[in-house]
Image (cartoon, rainbow, N blue to C red; front, side, top):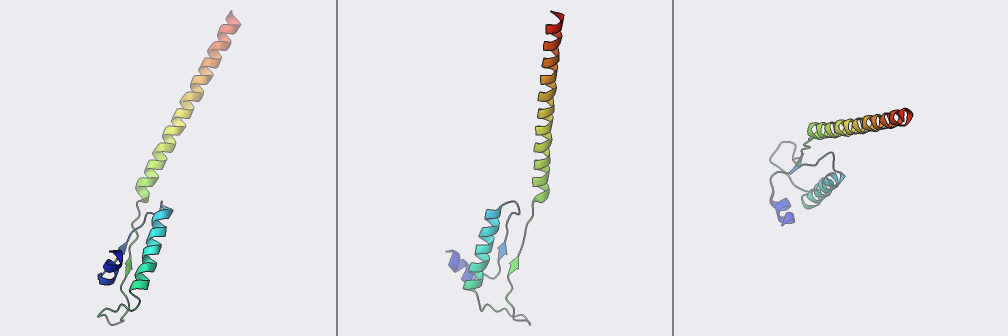
Length: 99
């Protein structure tokens, strides 16, 4: 089915995620397959060049925001745990010294 789509298509939009090596590999493989299936593709354009558009969609902002939020939450949890441990140690030391 994919081969038929490539040989009869009028345009191609290849999209990959910059956070996924697998998606880039897949787009690269598809790009090679398109070039193999359509080596002599000509359009009625002055240049006669093949018109294949590689569109890169980047969703970096969302990924960066999620990563930052996760890092902040982890840091806050670590700080709370450290403070709790320090409080427990201080209380134990005070109790031992007083008794």
